[in-house]
Length: 349
Image (cartoon, rainbow, N blue to C red):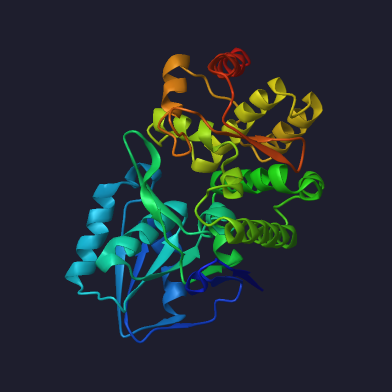
């Protein structure tokens, strides 16, 4: 199965392949960027499918807390040591953290070399690996340092998902729900009735999400409009992740909480009704995703929004669902209403 990503600049076009990774052949140097967990489970399988002039493995620590400039420097040092050149290719072999860092390293190494995404988590297959967002975190927030840099290809193999722990699987489901709520009511209703633990259903959902994201990225590569909708729940989630030092929650878990928070704000604005909010929360909880978070300091939480990439001139931008299958992008919400929303979600603990 193939899904094409068409960007305005044709040289950026590429294809997402689903369960079609047979062999990869390169006449240049290749470096695989991975982590200990993924390499232990799947590296041997990948190496059986890969041929190159020279091949190197660069192993980085596992976890969002290592998604920073120090790890990027480590990757770059290894690339220089192995004397990769502008004809070389990087392969991101892991989840969203590995993919984001590999893409960013590729974008700045020798002013840009090719990279390929081979995502091994559900979250990265349905979302993070597609669209060319790359980057790292710093002490001010998530993904504040990075670049839009498209891969040359993406290979999504559902075989790699069979070793995922339940939490990792559910974290990916959160991103699937995110897309359904904001872009496709029928897809949301299908998710309510069909378990993604079934392999056939899972493949359908992955295909659907990639199709949605392909359309969105084709229309808006650099997030000047509709692509921002893919950040539903993320404005809240990024603050939660930063406050907990990226250790308490997986990204998708924080997004699940963020969606519930965004829904509380959407109710206040008349964009959602109570039944819709209940259905979204119940779908998330059916996959054991967390849906609440105790905010220690509401003022500090609000101030952290100002570091969000979507914030311009201290105007906060929120992506909110408009009933099921629709959305609104709002940058006119009064501070008092936002603070009231944060108080409401805290009172519901």
